[in-house]
Amino acid sequence: MAYEPSEEPVALKILVAGGFGVGKTTLVGAISEIRPLRTEEVLSDRGIGVDDIDGVEGKTTTTVAMDFGRITIREGLVVYLFGTPGQERFWFMWDELSYGALGAVVLADTRRLTDCFPSIDYFEQRGTPFIVAVNCFDGAEEHEPEDVRIALDLDPGVPVILCDVRRRASAKVVLVTLVEHALRTLTPAAG
Image 1 (cartoon, helix red, strand yellow):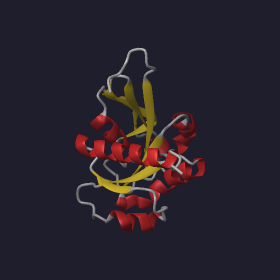
Image 2: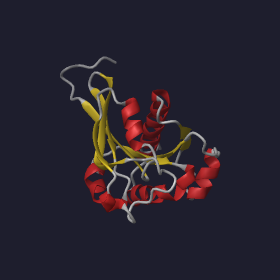
Image 3: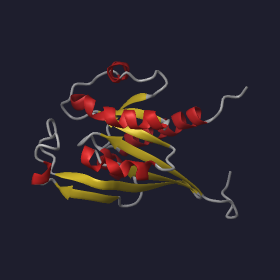
C-alpha cells in the first residue's frame, strides 16, 4: 500500500527504559537513522552514595533527561524512540516522556536484574504494553528468557527476549517484538 500525500502521517512513540547502565542510550544509537539526541553528562560527585554503580564501574556518563532517535518505516510512518533516564533522581521525567507512547522496552541486565523492577512497575501500573529485553553483556552469564520471566514475576503474556543492543539487527528485533505485543494487547479480540 503506497502512502498517499493526502493521508495524515503516522508517528509511533516507543520508550526505552531500565536501570542505570543497562544500554538504553546504546539501543537508541544502534537503530536510529538520525544522529541521536543525547543528554549525557559526566558522572559527578553528586551521584556518590545516590547512584548505584555496582556492576557498571567503568561507566563515566549518564543520561539526565532523555535519548531521542527516529526510524522511518516507510513514507508516512515514523517511529520515535525516547530513552528514559535510569537513575531514580531523574524519574520525574518519565510521565512527560511516556505520554502518548505505544509501548515500552524494559532493558534488563541479569547481573543487576532488580534494577528493572521500577520500570516494570511503572508500565504495569499505567497499563502500558511493554516487553523485557535482556541485554546480553560480554562476560555475563546467560539465562533463559523463561528463567528471567520467573525471576521478575512477569505475567505470561509479557514477551521476554535476549538481545545485544549494540547490534542494529538485534535492536530491530526488540522493537518489532514490542510493536507486535502492543498491537495484540491494544487491539480488542474479535468476537
